[in-house]
Image 1 (cartoon, one colour):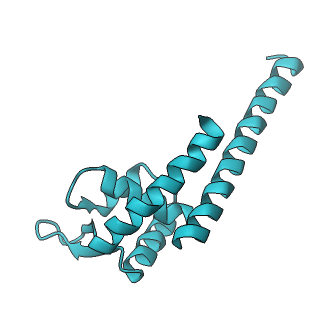
Image 2 (cartoon, one colour):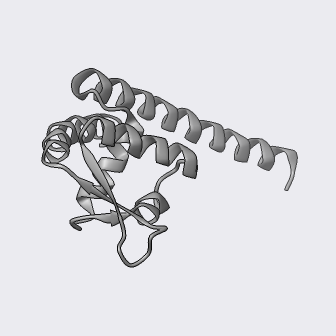
Image 3 (cartoon, one colour):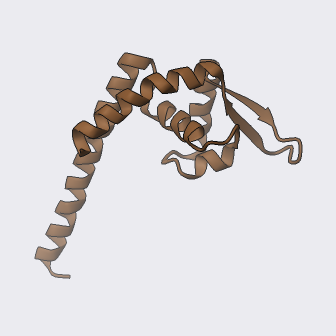
Amino acid sequence: MGRTGERELVGQWRDLMTCYNKIACDLDRELQDQHGLGLSEFEALDRLIESGQEKLRMHELAEGMYLSQSAFSRTVARLERAGLVGRSMCMDDRRAMFVKPTDDGRARHAEARDTHRKVLGHHLG
């Protein structure tokens, strides 16, 4: 790859990162201001509820997330402290934990979902 091709490639990457960062910052600000949720907390709650499952194993929920394992665990712990999810041991595998949205978590998600989709629509629609 020549220098021109390399510059174009790096330029595309930087444009993509700029776009992502702008959207992520807007989402984080709006979700925090209007619903008391950070972007990571909303994303975990959204993926959990949108899965259509009553509960998910922690590792199943973490698979699609962009967070490290420790950052994901802290995110779920914040949701649990806020009363938006509950965690329980898997009876078949004591090493595994289940995450389940609470009624308050479902209600907060329903409110925040509209804000989330509105911000996405503004940037990507």
